[in-house]
Structure formats: C-alpha cells, structure tokens
Amino acid sequence: MTPNNIISNAILDRLPKHLLQYIKPQNYEDYTFINQAVWRYVMRKNVDYLSSVAHSSYLVGLKQTGISIDNIPNMYGMNRILQEIGWAAVAVDGFIPPNAFMEFQAYNVLVIASDIRQLEHIEYTPAPDIIHEGAGHAPIIANPEYAEYLRRFGEIGCKAISSAKDYELYEAVRLLSILKEAPNTPEADIENAEKQVEFLQENMGAPSEMALIRNLHWWTVEYGLIGTLEHPKIYGAGLLSSIGESAWCMTDKVKKLPYTIEALHQNFDITKPQPQLFVTPDFAHLSLVLEEFANTMALRTGGLKGLKKLIASKALGTIELSTGIQISGIFNQVIEANNEAIYFQTTGNTALANREKELVGHGIKNHPNGFGSPIGKLKGINLAIEDMSPRDLRAYNIYEGEIVTLEFENNLKVCGEIITGKRNLQGKIILICFKNCTVTHNNTVLFTPEMGHYDMVVGKSIVSAFSGPSDYNSFNLITHKLTQETIKIKKTETTLALEKLYQKVRDYREGKTENLDFLALQKNLIENHPQDWLLTLELYELAHRDELTEIQELLLKHLSSLKQIRPEVAHLIQNGLDIVNKPIEV
Image (cartoon, rainbow, N blue to C red):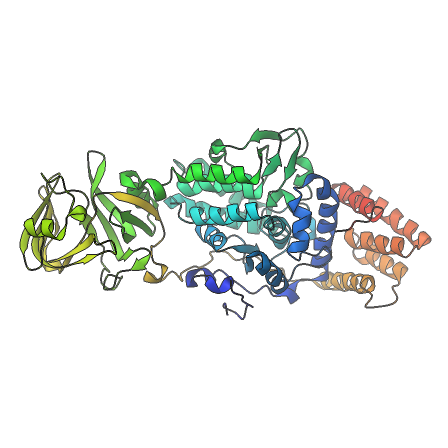
C-alpha cells in the first residue's frame, strides 16, 4: 500500500520510497456538485470539438482509460483500467519538482493534480488540475508509441541536471499558479508574483539541462501538434484540456513550426496562450528528437563539463567513472588540467555505488564529510590502473600491504599503505583503500593521515554525470516540504446553497429523483445567484431532453440576458447551447 490509505496496484508498488512523499489522497468526496458540473461542461465541449481536431488516439483513449464525460474520474477506477495498458495514476498537490514529475513518468505513472479549476476559470487555468491531467494526459497514453515516448522522456528527463536557479523559478511559478487559481486573491499579490517570475526568467543565465528538456516537454507533451503544418491534429494535454486554447491553436493566429531539436531553445509562459506551436509528423519522430537531445546531456557525455554542471547545480548528483564506479553527493570542487578533470571533491554525505547499488561499507555513514579522489592515468604509464592485470598491479606495487606513491599526471600524488581493493564483476579494480595516506596536488594538501583511511576510486575518465543519487536507498530523500499549498476556499452560505441547487439538478438528470421544479429553481437562481450561468444551462439541457418547450423558452430568455450582462461568458453559454442541440456520443 502507498501512504495515506491510497489504493495501490502492481505498478504503484514499484515506486521508490522518495516518490511516495508527493502522493496525496484524491479525497473524491471533496468535489462539489459545481466541480462536477464544470468537469461535465468542459468534457462535453471538448469531445464535441476535439472529435474533429484531436489525434485519433484521443477519443479511443477516453474509452480505454475509463474517463467519463459526466463524472470527475475516480483515481481508483482509473487505475484499474490504466493497469491494463501498463500505467497508473497518483494524485498530487499542484506542481511538483520537475525531476520528481519526470521520474513518475519513468515508472509509467501519471501525476494528476486532483484539484479542479473554478467555474470562473473554466476555459483555462495556469495551475495543473484534474481536467488538464485526467482529460488531457490520460487518453493519449493509450497510444503505445506515445506511451513509450512519455516513459522514455521521464527516464531521461529525471537525470537532467538543474541549475541552482531552476528550483527558485519552480517555486515562483507554483506560487503564481496557486494565486491565479485561488478565488479573491488581491490583484497586487498576483502582480507581485508575476513580477517575480518575470525577474527570475530574465536572470536565469545559461539554460540548464532541465530547463532545455522542460522546453521539449512543453512543446510536445503539453502543447504538441501532430500531422502536417497545414492540417495538424492536437495531442498535447494543455491543448486537449483547454476549451479556449484548443480552438485558438487551430487558427492562423498561432504559428505552426516543424518540430525539431531547435524547440528546446523556445521558452514559454504558462500564464498566456502560446504564440507558436510545433508539429511532429508522427509520434516516432518525438523519440528521435529526444534521443538527439539526450546525446548532448552529461548523462551520456560525462567529462569535465558534466562535473561542472553538477557543481553549479549545488544539488545531489552522481558521476560515473570509466570502471563503472559511481559517486553520489553534492559536488563542490574540481581540479582540472588540459580541459579534463583530474580530481573531484564532494561536500557532506557521499555514497559510492556500482550498477546503481551502493557498495558495502561506502554509504553516507562511511563518508559523511565529503569525498575526493583523483581521475586519470599514472604519470609515464600508458596502461590505466583499471586496465592492469593482477600481474601488472603487482609490478607497480599496487598490492595489499605495500607502501606506495601513485603519481598521477599533472602533479597529483597519492602516498600511503594499501589496505585492500574492490573489483567489479568484470574483474576491473574500482576502488583502493589506503591508511596513513597523504594526497597532494602541487603544493596543495588534499588529504592527510589524520583524516582516517583514504578510499581512492579508480577510473581514467568521467563517462556520465546526472542529477540525483545512483542508489536512491543511500540517501534520505524524504525531505519535500511545500512552501505554499494550494489554497482551499472557505465557503460562504451562498456558495453552499448554490451547491445544493446543482445537486438537485444532477440528481434529477441521473434519475435519482423523479421530479424537478424548474421554475422554482430558476427563480432561486435569479434572486440569489444572478451571476451563475452554468446551472441555468444545465436546466435548459434537461428541459430540452424532457421536451418542456415553454420552460426552455424561459430559460433561454434568461441565458440571453446573462450573455448581455456578462459578455465574458457569452461564448461559453452559446457553446453550451450548441452542444445541447447537437447530442454527442463517445
């Protein structure tokens, strides 16, 4: 079982412990009847419109993933069906850190913000919500090619190295999305939050790997189009879940560009409609571009540049040496020569691993105060230590009990008595332990005997550098604390009364009650809730269904009046009327 009594399944049971801290119960009973009406309106409108402009996988996926038009999806029901296509879903509180979001994807788990947008933001919200996640992301993963792209994106994306400013921007964007979605937020608060986001965006410096891959994610998973430039179809979740932008994006006002690796340099603003979108010819092309970018990441290139990215991130990361040994910690120093790293240093808790499994005796308890080691070949010897046979090692006195001076290239020396060594499965020596050891570089002392035993990792080069630890069990990663939780509304008596009216209408539509006093309900709405338009529209739908012509005319008159009084929702009312007169099926 996952935390908080959340129903689990085989896919969720594979999640590592550190991801469980982001999961929260869906609390389905917290959805109001107004929330349910918002979901139903958006879904009816989306299915009506998207049936002609979305990728064919969308409508098929709605059926396969158990997404209903009439009801907000229950995570338990979704998981029973998603499991059949190898996926699962979990509820979270709004935005979560990008690395965690992508790691969930790598485990075939959709992250669903379980809150739902307010009626006032029915067309679009910058905050993630269940309409965006459930109705946008879930249906498309029924397409196997796209599902594999999403999983692979998560697998690669969670290894992308962030800059120190990325997390600051994440927190600022999260706060802005919360404030914009929350009712009655003072305009000054929103303005200040917008200015902070804008300031950070303009002062990020060179984009990190995470910033770049996040752009690829945005222009594909969130706002992607597929097909031809002249006749594209929608597959991005941000478009599929926005009844405003899904129509806007199909107009000539939005520039359509071929999707290539260049999209990673195109930034985005989550609070505004996108001025341009990228079109992929097919889902397979997405994976080609992803691999093209992955080939540029430190994950695959390693080297001094990769190590410097980790140092700049000031966050937990890992380097892997040519022998396969992996060092995880917060890297804070590198000595370089001839554009190569010759010595690295971490600060604080550090762990060593091989093949993503911590080496026995080399966890954070053994290395709580940082870890440093040389990288490269010995001076004047063409054969690297890792390539030496047992006979070679003996010839160079790299042998248990020997007091030895290992002089590396570029004046780096390790002097001490060898205690023991560790080898990998291929027989290569990956670590040598010394006592009474001194490590120097030129005139700088890097390690002294007083500091204890010295563990020197073996490797002639850094072959990989990536975000996060090699073995997730090596570190306590249960540290996530939200700086700002999503804001829950304190309901007024008026709101509670309106919810009861929505319940009456829903119960009647679902056959739970046999009678509905249309005129009394409408009178109540006009007198006590004059700004509400959605319930009148639902009443009109039922009057149309029941062929109550006179009541239809009265309700239509009121809706026409609302269109005049509230021009900002006139198109929403008209769209709803059009749907009533054009029944849809999924």
